[in-house]
Amino acid sequence: MTNSATTSMKALILFDSKSFGGSTDKLIDTIGLKLAEAGAYVEKARCKSRGDYSFVKEFDVVIMGAPIYYLMVSSELMGALLQSNLKSNLDGKKIGLFLSCGSPELMANMLYLPQLKLNLIGSTILAEKVFAPNQVTDQSVIAHYVDELIAAYQKSLAE
Ligand SMILES: Cc1cc2nc3c(=O)[nH]c(=O)nc-3n(C[C@H](O)[C@H](O)[C@H](O)COP(=O)(O)O)c2cc1C
Image 1: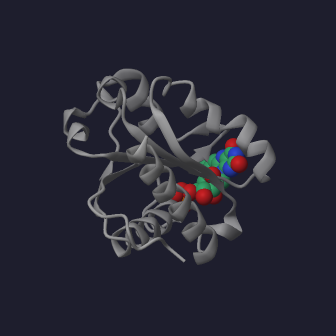
Image 2 (image 1 turned 45 degrees about the vertical axis):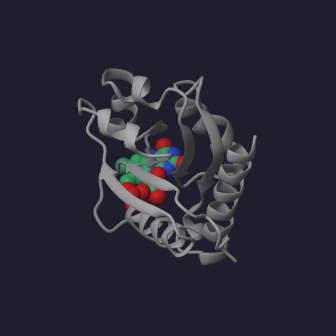
Image 3 (image 1 turned 120 degrees about the vertical axis):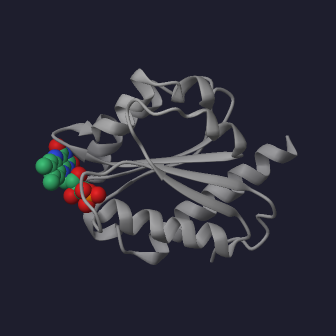
């Protein structure tokens, strides 16, 4: 059950995918809905590797998500972290990470999440999750991820 006391969190879901209506779209719709149900203000934006990310400063939490293609986090999100001003605008931000892929979860956690995390040193990661194909539409698994993110956000405010 999603925590109903998120209050005024402003969350941005920054995502990349080569597909439309695929796993990533399904995940961001469900994550966004569950955050909104918990009281958060939510916007989503598709990554461009050379975009201007100064707008992320307006958000309390930036949730980044993408699929894995050919062993790599999808290129526009990785490109944005490596080539744009995204990383500098994320400095000190609270972050959520999610990936979707076809590999078993343990291997994916070791191979894929570090590709993002190595570029996020200095940011607070509230929650991270690699979604296996059968979890992309699993409401309880996604709710657990969102609950974890909200709980970590609230804890960070109390510190
Ligand atoms: C061209 C292509 C390459 C992929 N390569 C990998 C891979 O290297 N490792 C992996 O675990 N999954 C891989 N997958 C599976 C995708 O990561 C997975 O299906 C993901 O949920 C797709 O997200 P999307 O529907 O938003 O595109 C690949 C899928 C495609 C279509």
